[in-house]
Length: 111
Length: 116
Image (cartoon, rainbow over all chains, first blue to last red; front, top):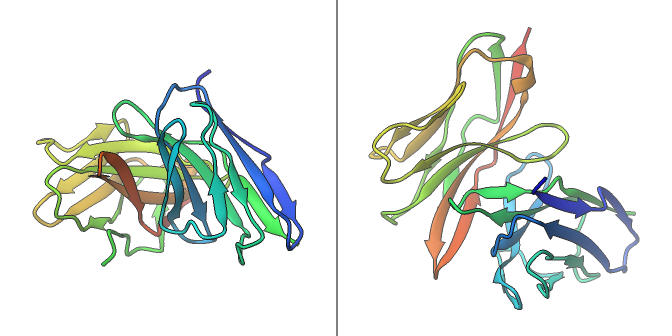
């Protein structure tokens, strides 16, 4: 089955630690995105990538980093510079008709 | 200015009745797309329906229809014959193309509760 997988589902981080969230897709999509969702709010764009080895900052990129070494993979690192990282993180890709497909999400909690 | 506005933080509807979730958008681009997503408590975002800015007819997908009023910049979601499983957050989104990139804007969502 084609789709987007994210791991882990739940992640706990101590203050000062970097953590990496995984996002893999087998939909053969070029464009991939990372969003952050805070409770009761909509999605905000962190980073996006249109092709391999290229990525751009979104609206709230500070404290985050990404890589795109393979078409299928777009990992997100939450660095210690992100002051309030507790949130729900969603990875997405864009399909043929420009609709967004989403992964199941990772819930990050800072202890 | 907000790109997507959803003015109903929460809505209640009786099972089997129809409900309309409001969405207004702001863009100066002639070409854009409008989407509705459902987010159950599990967190996954489920694509429901799409309307292109040049589409003449309102989009429909099963029990979902999108009431597209271009002049008013309105893209309301209508759910007919509500079911208990429709209880979830609903997000309206708009796609614009900027520098050959599809950028999506999301509203703050409407929490729908379907009562038995």
